[in-house]
Image 1 (cartoon, rainbow, N blue to C red):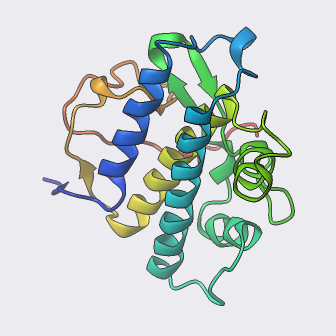
Image 2: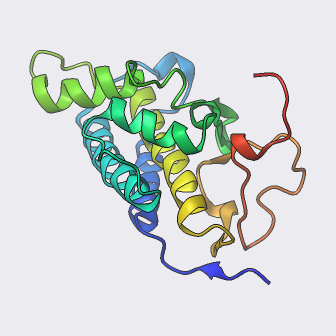
Image 3: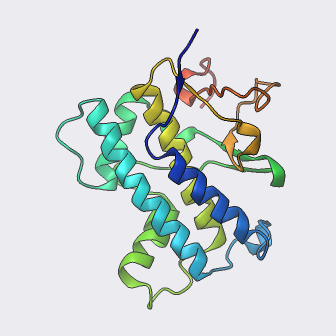
Amino acid sequence: METPILNPPHWNYYELLERDLEVCFRFVEPLECHYEVYSIEFARIILAAATEIENAFRGFAKTISYTPEPSSIGAYAACVTSRFPRFAKMQILMRKYSIVLTPWDGFTASTPPDWWTYGYNKIKHDRLQFPGAPTLIRAIKAVASLQVLLLHYYRVKYPSGLLAFDPVTLLMIPLERNDPMQGVDTMWGWTLPDEEQAGPN
């Protein structure tokens, strides 16, 4: 029997961010026509998620003993894809809203995702010049990106572990097309893109 993970690093923080995001949906429904709506609250969520992503990337690099130590988002792309080449392919499902996201889509050593370049960086370094940077869709993708990274991080940190909580309560879960029972169990296992049966890219 596999041993459940009790308090994996960063997960409680992730859940808080997810709840904060869902509270925003009371005011801005997550519909495509609202994706470019911007808000200070979305800025806060993007900044918090991106900061936690940087922390999780450092933990991931340390866990796999990656050298030299990455010092930029591009270097972390090389780090994570050294172990998981299909990292950026992972899709996240927001079941309640029938939304499927690929939050790291196009992520390479030279190309950070939009939510990072035009969301996080603009908010952090030039917020007054780019007041429209913290959009709804960037906030959603930033939070989804954190989940994707954490699930990859936990796979290397706890190779045979399960997350011990009920995924039914989550706003976001990995999209696994071949799992009809997804989200039913209270012990959560997940499949990463690099673990799926080989198929078309």
